[in-house]
Image (cartoon, rainbow, N blue to C red; front, side, top):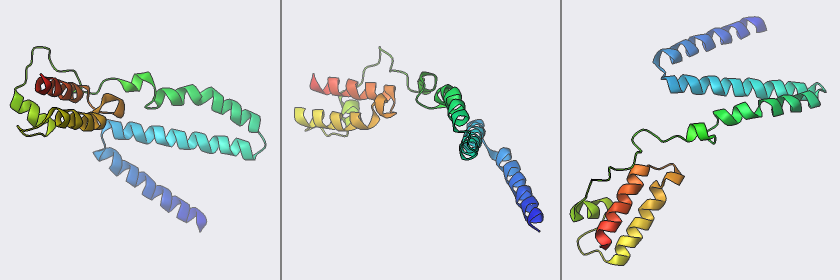
Amino acid sequence: MHYFLLGLGLLFAVIGLYRFFLSASVSQIKSLFLTGFFIAFLVGVFYLAITGKLPAAIGLLVAVLPFFYQASPFSKKNRQKKPGSAAPQSGTKISREEALEILGLDEKATTDDIKAAHKKLIKKIHPDQDGSEWMAAKLNEARDKLLK
C-alpha cells in the first residue's frame, strides 16, 4: 500500500513539474534547478554525516563551496549592471520643474528641504542597496540643479 501512495505522489509531482515547465520563464527554471541541486547536496552531506563519514561530508562541502559561491548573488559575475541601470547621458539637462518633481518638492523648497529629500530618496534607491545607478544619477542631477 505504501508503494502505491509513493507512486501516486511521484505521479502528482511529475504532473506538477510538467505544468510548471509549460508556463515558467528561464530564470524560474534555473532557480528551480539550483534549489533542487542545493537541497540534494545538503541531503547527501547530512547522510554522510549521520552514517559516520563526517570527514568525507566536510571534504565534499569544502570542495563544492566555490561553485555555490559562484552561483550566489554575492559573486562578481552576478553583480553585473541590471538592464536599464546605465548612467544618464552626459548631454541631458533637466529643468527646475523636473528636478522638483524628481525630489518630490514644491517651488518654495529651501536648501535644507532639498538636501533632506535627496538624502531620503538616495538611501532607498542607491546602487549599493540594489537600486538603479541611473535613478541615483538622476537624483544627484536634480539636487545639483536645485542647489545652484
